[in-house]
Image 1 (tube, rainbow, N blue to C red):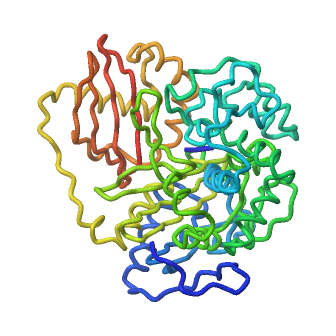
Image 2: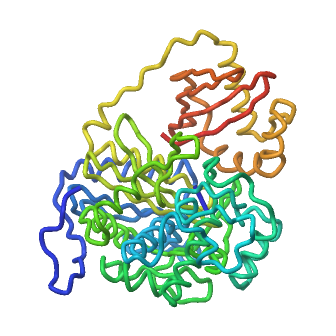
Length: 471
């Protein structure tokens, strides 16, 4: 599971937030969104996409494109339901903060206080470590039998047993590493404290009060009206993918929703009605490691910048669905993109749509820096092309990267980006050094899709880090 202002003037007497009303806006923006999303459907080979935009605390756009189901030719609409994957984490985090405000749990309490199966090696792991992804606990999606377990019905205890039996990857607070186990465990802790299934707790405390009336737990066997089927693209045609088994995701990614409900969530966040201001501040503040350095994750949200503007976001991915929620608080703008194709990249779609509503984002011009080492640029561009083609040689990388990439991850990365098109731009925008390593950041355009490419070369002249981040 991947990897992301204003106030309501009217509240119902019951305290339930009203559904978001559609605001007026220039038709020209609608036309820009239509043209861009349809181009992305073609270039990314997407089955269906649904989009919502909340500006100045009002829903200004909601629409579906492509197909929710290819076999019966069902159009994707604003009501289409998608698996939102790891966007679930922000709901789990909000639930935890509700319990913190009620004095039922402490952020710096040890996990073992609430989870009876915690091994002795977790003695220093706290609730805060789980929330901001610094626990050191192994990600359960990396265990050998995860794919099998994800397709079958297994208890939470069975899934967690595979994690409690292995050592920590690092000491709590030492590093920031995205880990689904952290939020799966938080979901179990919420259940332990409240005595309710996590889904029931979220419906009663969050979904119901904010008007997320159709949001539910994804379940392959349940009848979910307007559910989108999931697909993968294998270079020539679409293939059916299985729906997510909720027991394999829990508080880390078991929610299904549509863009209208997610727009209500965006309005609820701006209204500040679910939590106290101090709780929201903690949720949207980048965490700190033991050495005092910051990392880019709050509680269920990535804390970032885009084109010089603060960008608070989270993406999500299940076997066949991809999702993105992008908040630009300085622009009072939220963009939500949901799609039902495994290779989908909703991040660049959300960011480009945001530029249609924000003059500051649209006007931003990134300046390339002088490239004093063009030979390295050629080397890294060639490396990127080889990675796109899945032909990169293991000896180009250091031992750690070889272990991470080969053979499966490289193939997966290639499958996600090799259909976007050729490398049309590769320009240096940042260069730094630390000890004996060199880090390079490039503006990369694959076909029509814009990315930032990150590369690190160690003291032995081996590739020690590489990544693409949608612009």
